[in-house]
Image (cartoon, rainbow, N blue to C red; front, side):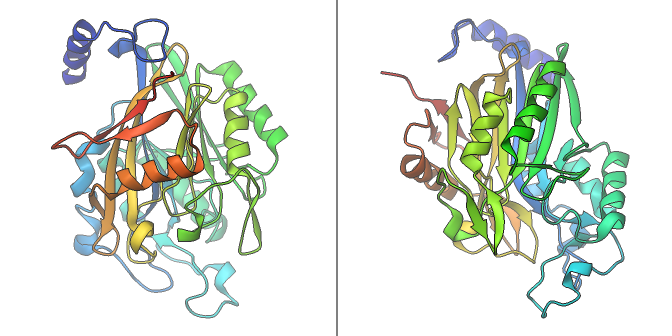
Length: 359
């Protein structure tokens, strides 16, 4: 009811042309997509490292920004599984292998926080084999959260328009991940999705990791001997093939954003809630919630909100303004022709993602 009242008032008050659009865009004509980066809510492996109160309230400091209007998306960095040993760690020295399994009872916290789509196309989804993957998918579905990756695609409907989310990573193609390394195959996947849907959203896990990966270049990235993809080439290919929004994650730090062919690309949203097991020092602990509004008729980016957060107390997100300056600097340095800027709002935790006016 509140959403309907809000939309009616907004339609009456904002019959103006949105910058860059040819016709007025009213409240009932846009899709809201809220996106965050990596989530890992503590782990039972190799030891038990869990948040206070057994996870209760860990999303509370940012809960009001995650209210599900249309789509609320995150990347799940690990699996939900109560028991099991990670085979990839059998021959690794202590502290040199990273595998995460969250308590199965924690899956409901994603639903309570407002998430309705979660990425499973990443390098930790298969840490505990088919058992970990299958248990995670089952628990997500049981809690009304759609898994996103490979053949697992999230579908939504808004005002008669069909929306789909596809998930890619730098891993070899598999049922839970399409690959960003094969641009031709990726482009065809997106084209096929666009034929059957009005709005196509692409999530990808790619790029190097850590503070040294803050900046992006239009070249192939290598990390720990692994091919992590050319994320600029992939994201722009995705848009060229029909994607209306591209959400990146994997580097564990924020990266620049750009407007490409009127579509918003977020190259990495960093760590969002990664309790106890991740490096959250300096830029690794700076993150954001992005709320993007897309035209339902064209899929073009209209405007958006940028809610800056910082990970504190071993990895719990709380509002903090540092991300605004960081992302604006990265945009200026890496993508000066990006077409967007983040504008702080006085006396508010919410900044605005604004389309720069063309001269």
